[in-house]
Image 1 (cartoon, rainbow, N blue to C red):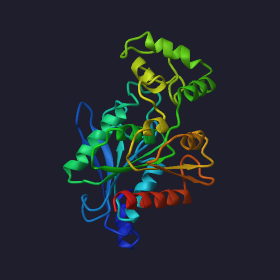
Image 2: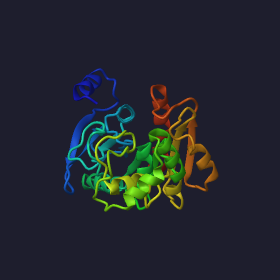
Image 3: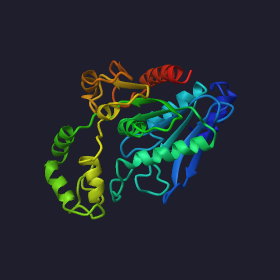
Length: 296
């Protein structure tokens, strides 16, 4: 949220608490990481903290993330929304498809760990981890061995990716058999580039793609499927999806078929993958309920 806008809203009494908004940067390894912090209480340590992760090749100021931070601030709840580096120093905005791809899906777990450690250093001891789309599955992957300050997770239309769906989607989008591209990648060292201009995720023949990066997203060692990642977990989890969501259309059936006693699943009628407008308010209501349950 723009700092001047926050000041104006506070002055008019439209926010329930004084909100401090700032970009936080850390450098735990080679790259500078950044995140948007909104403190809507007297201090960062007061009340619960929501750690909110964006989706594929996206960023922390995309509409759904910025909206959720603003709505949480209206309720006096603090939040931290990181930008995954995706291998770039101090990354901002959507990932440019013309940029070379060295990043890996599983790197998100490491970076989430860095941000949890930063929150702990500030004295925060109660965190709800949340994520949208791929960010939801990455949050679930982190939560398999989550730090003790993580009290619950809230997954917004998290990934339902399976090997079969990835193969079908890749061939439909790019008219190339995924198995052939995986075989090419496996014949290379992880740091070597895929041949030609390989289509990758949302990028049609964009920048170069390393073999390690390609395999991470298309033939991973750890499942990318949220339901698989939640198997055996005990962390209280609330998942929300929409009936008009064509991105994770298989998610409701997967959850229904799974044995996940720690999971509550809510589906919003007519909501799509991004929960715009009033649907964001409904997502907020569910998140507030979950916060009250796991951090009363």
